[in-house]
Length: 282
Image (tube, rainbow, N blue to C red; front, top):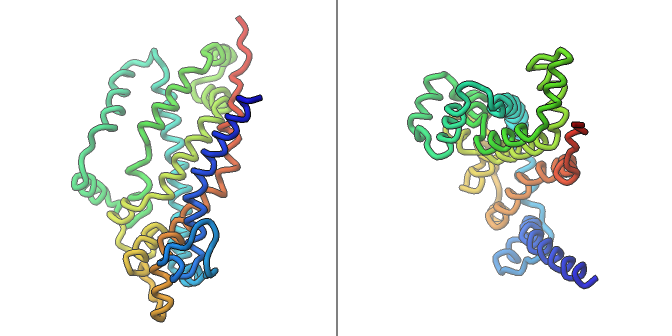
């Protein structure tokens, strides 16, 4: 009983420490400029104010860029999951010829890359600049996620695949009908990892996109913080400009984190429920 109480206090403390910074950011995003500048905002808004939200969300460019972010995230995550799953499944086969060099090449890219200029030249040479593919393709496979999925596939019982092969399934049939249904947990985890990465990504778009209509929302909000409006023309009085300057960072954090937070509960159960690999009888 004492152990449970101590554990409960520890976990409660962890929850408080985790939630406090975010609640403080939310409170600052709805607070007035004077309270923020005076450092009076803690967990509750002071002088409730939605000016920055109204200015940002009334701008049509914001919604255009938000739509771009959704499209980029969905397309990039789908491509990344397909490529990562296929590559990891191949690398999980110990009998594969050339498996070691393929793993070595993948791991090598974790520590070394061509650099910013060669990547820019490559993307430009392929004609990908000012297209969705400049944002989606260069980071299509995360080596860390690849190794995680590879380790997961290696842990699946080989007897299941052997039994499926005896029943007449080919390689793709085994992957689609046997392996993937048993891999819902790791796939859901990879979907979350990739979606968060692409949702928050801004530098590839900043580097490869020149058309403001193609910008993701992260570029819009970055430009807004820097004193711009991401290509829009919002004329605001001085008091409003001071209010925006005071809590724009907090509003930015809330607007970018909210979609991921809303989607996380639908994936959370895969993290806590685990997975039953099936009953393999000897």
